[in-house]
Figure 1 (cartoon, helix red, strand yellow):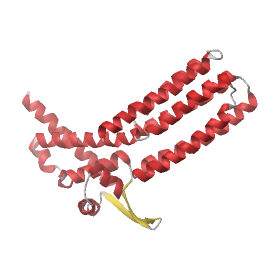
Figure 2: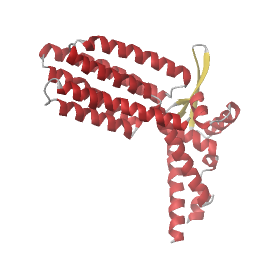
Figure 3: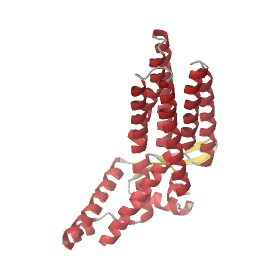
Figure 4: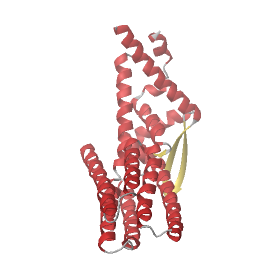
Length: 184
Length: 104
């Protein structure tokens, strides 16, 4: 083998690994959906009540399942991504359980508003360990947005979480969509 | 020294398709036949042949099962396969590093 061939093989490996990462980018509809729902949810909390989440959360979960099934038909999902998906679902259910406990102990909108972005950020960081830097960055940003929002009074905390949290999810979805289209 | 490394390079991984299969399995974990085919753009026959070579070398394990009445082949790296592949990658890096040193 010549040095050029070794270089070719390494370049080929890097290309394949980059393609694997693009699988994560295939998940852009989830980011667009939840970004939009966060904006509707937090803005709805200002104009209506925090009870808006009781409608938004199941609608989001249902639409996520529909998207997941549609995606599954389009492309075979690698077992590792499936495992990550199941892990995220179990953690999500556990976080929802923690949230129900939190509601029993506090009625502070500041704490309630901070809970989900903070924990979703943690979930993304967990996924990022397997899926790469982009998920780690989104997770880190959501945690920063949640913690920063904790000290912001109503209704500015809601506006901050809608734009900083929901907006960043939508931005991520748009970037991922561009990445997928570019690769297609 | 470079010649020595080149002579000891594992020939099984020198085929691009097999290098690709090992890369997919290392970076994505256990994967099914369709996923690998989709990632590498190989034909069914071609991929089957390369998988067989890797299986015979003891680098991967193939598990055939039926999911919803459809046959499915799951490919899994063996510990010796992972070790051999990582060793191969180290050797590739060494070749490049030595070539760079020689250039200087």
